[in-house]
Image (cartoon, rainbow, N blue to C red; front, side, top):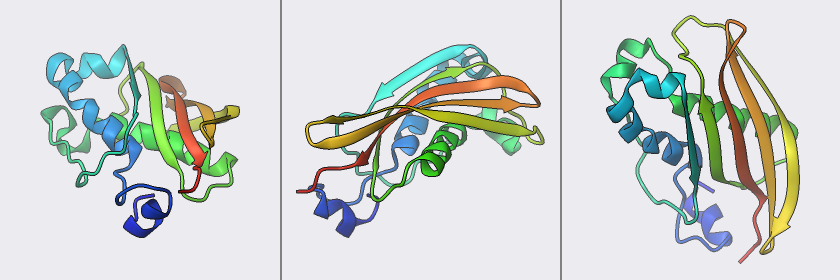
Amino acid sequence: MHDDTVAQTFGSRGGLLSGVDVWAYMTQPCIDRWGERFLTGSTMEARLVSPVYLAEVRDDHEVYADDAVCHPGFLARQANSVLHLDVELGPWIHVGTRAHHRGLVRDGDVLEVRGRVADEYERKGHRFVDVDVEVTANGVAVWSAFHTAIWQPRTG
């Protein structure tokens, strides 16, 4: 869905920005306000209700300086990894994530990602899938999410 030609066959005017990139971009005001406290004890939920056509998002906040602390956008990408492993995907669209930030992920931590498909359903001609995901760092739960995607968009 990030390619103009593919996205246009599903009714979009052009390639879409990755949903996890939009979600990651939306964490910036939270980090500005609460800093590392946001990454260690918060919940953030976003539902993407219309396409976003933007250049790739970059986040140079000081909390991520020297790559010592992992960006929550990387953790959201792990939910996509679970989706790729559990669902046979063609073009698909990330539409929402409710994430619980429980701890920092630091450079050198050993990560484990576990997930499962929680539901699959139809709405307005699209096929949706909900995925539950948990990320641990060094055996401690640091991030969990309920991730929703259109895994089979309607055509036209």
